[in-house]
Length: 387
Ligand code: PMP
Ligand code: GLN
Image (tube, rainbow, N blue to C red; front, side):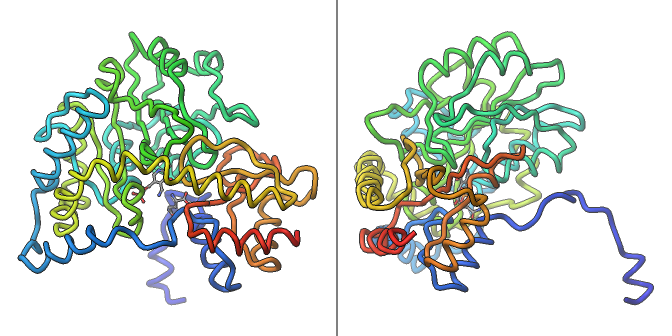
């Protein structure tokens, strides 16, 4: 190493962070030619009409920057959608920003609000980006365990964790990795806890349409008293089966959104234009997202039925792309070890749930993504039956 390079050494802002498990398991799946039920993405073709609309948008010259807050027509149509789904009165001009994915919307919202030393309540297990996003902003995650095996929030415990430094609560419904969803009782508890506090809410609702068994999606947008303190984050990737397009949006009251946009404009500035033009048209096909929950539920049910032939025991999933399975009665191996061994020796990649915990925890539970072709699920289960 030259002296110059030695002088360039710097202190990591995220010393305890490695490569995300999704990439790790997907690379392992490719290396071992395993079926990838790990990282959450569909393996079937997305809607051909939507692809054609993007193509048309490009051919007709929609290839330059759109407004930094997102294509106006798309924001207007999103506002109409939120009015019809959640009776929310959202101003398309001042309260919606299109972002390059839900992950970015979450990061930007946290960066907008958090100051050094602020506390953020996070439920454990949590989607893997939340804690690094908090830490990089100099704030402190305050972890509250979800109950096992129903992954519910203990609101009495939440009350004991609120301090004058509590700046935000992060919610995620439907929940990744567990598939649990918030109920109206959770919402009542949340309302009474945050009332008369200065606590903001970050609500990750990327799976808003992926909800099963006639459960209602409890969006923060339904409740004016929660909405006024919330950044609500969504992803087109999840709704339209195009996770690789990386487009999403954030909804927040105008005063919060104004600050959000200050962060956004010097980070991304504006997002992919032809995709926004296409979505502005396609979003009018209400049946597409209204039927999505039932369609994905069928996949969950089919997978569950197939998995009965294996030693894995299903935990309930009421939403998201995922279902958890326990192998507690079958093996004592650590989740990470088993996930790697199943990939290498049985040819099926999954995600160990322990990686979503920020405290040491190993319940012998793996996460499976079931949003796949039936033939993929059948072949995966054929392989898992040998375990
Ligand atoms: N939040 C959760 C809970 C997710 O599972 C995902 C999945 N990708 C995201 C946010 C991010 O979505 P996007 O791909 O649009 O960034
Ligand atoms: N959200 C997806 C999952 O939970 C993956 C997204 C990613 O790879 N960052 O599998």
